[in-house]
Length: 185
Image (cartoon, rainbow, N blue to C red; front, top):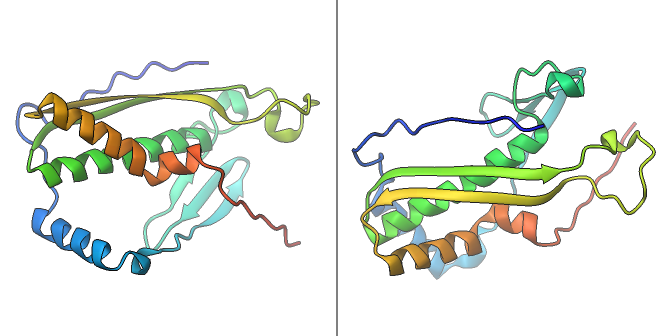
C-alpha cells in the first residue's frame, strides 16, 4: 500500500528562518572542549488509550499521538509507528542540513526531504505464523534531500557526507544498538 504525498514547502523564494549562529557556534565550541559532558539520556513514556491509539510523552511537551491506519485496525487519526520512524529520520537529517548550512554561513531557501521505506507487514506484529527468517521492519529506506541555497558542489558534497555520517537517527538505524526490554506485570 502506497500513499502519494504532494507537499510543497511554504518558504517561497525567501530564506528559511535560520538558527542562532552565535549560540550554535558556542555550543560547538563547548562540545569540542568537553565531549564527555554531552552524553544525554532521552526518555519517553507511552500510554495506550485503547486499540492501537497511543500517546507518547517526551519532556514536558504535548503527547506524540500514534495510531494505525484503518486497514491495520486503527482509526487512521495519526501516523503509525513506522511512519513516525520516517518522520524522525527526516527531521533529524533536516536538523543536520540546517546546522551545516549555518556552519557554512549559507542561508537555505528550501529544505525538503522525501522519505519512503519498504516493509513486509505479513508477520502482523508477531501474531501470524511467519517463517523465522522473516524480519519485521524496514528493509530499505530511501531519502531524497532537496536543498535550495547558494552552495558550491564541494559544499554540497561535504554537507551530505557530514549529515549522513552524524545523524543520530540514521546511525541508530544503521548500527547495532544494545536493546533491553522488560515486561512488568
